[in-house]
Image 1 (spheres, rainbow, N blue to C red):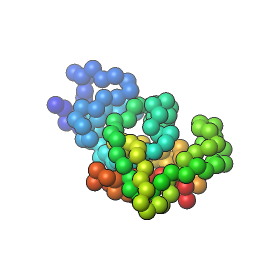
Image 2: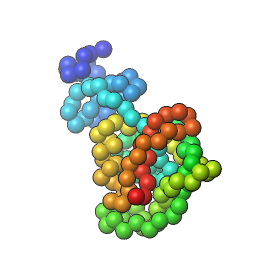
Image 3: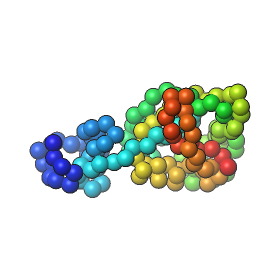
Image 4: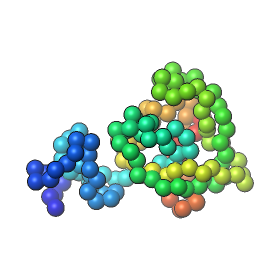
Length: 145
């Protein structure tokens, strides 16, 4: 296995990238080499679960699994962020604190760079917080502020 930054000409790597070792070593088509990436968890209960949104936003399908967030529920809100409205509809779900309730969703593995992309995608009135899921994983969650 090559060291990060060494030539990778002996590998056939698709242009969209290839994960070599889970959560540690990935091929970046942007920089054209293998590099170590710290993966994080992102909990989604809405649009980021859609494969078309993942491909449009991040250029890849995310690796994830079912998980649950306790102490929250979803509520319908109206989105007014014009950039977001060009991608998604005006009706959107947001997580709101609600003891005794839960949200079933997906927890995805994402890089720091992908978190930055999602920050730009989410409506301007959303914030990102850190939560603990039923699985025990610490994950980012976006909700209306």
